[in-house]
Image (cartoon, rainbow, N blue to C red; front, side, top):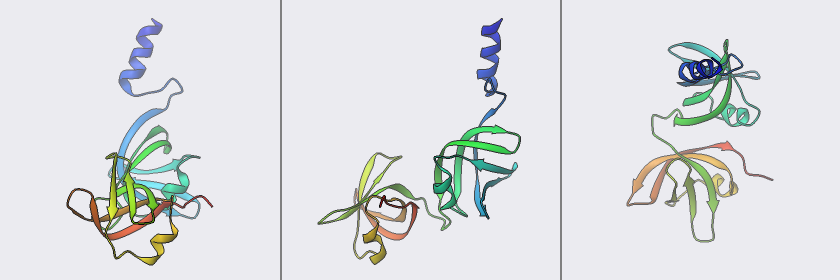
Length: 156
């Protein structure tokens, strides 16, 4: 009997606490101290001690959020940036400023891309930051940067 109940919970996407697991695409909106996800299914309030600051830095972006929902509140356990707001697919990862080049390690693709120069001067102060980069890929691992943004600032 208990096995059947647990199987029902797993199949339905409901956790033992009564929360439902979701995977929802929508647009982030930041107002005051609240971060919400707007989708065709309504507005959800996002919570996550680990990720909320990153989500705040993505106001207006289109994201895919994964978490558990209870009512209108979502405990976010992960997200994927789909469009930072400029209509382009981003490369997301940690920025490395080397002696000879600037690169970003794209987390989702498991691949390092070198950023073609010239680059905005402000990017050189962001070693170690989690960033999004959009632009044209030239060759196999070189990106001609069109735009970039900071998701998580570098550690001081």
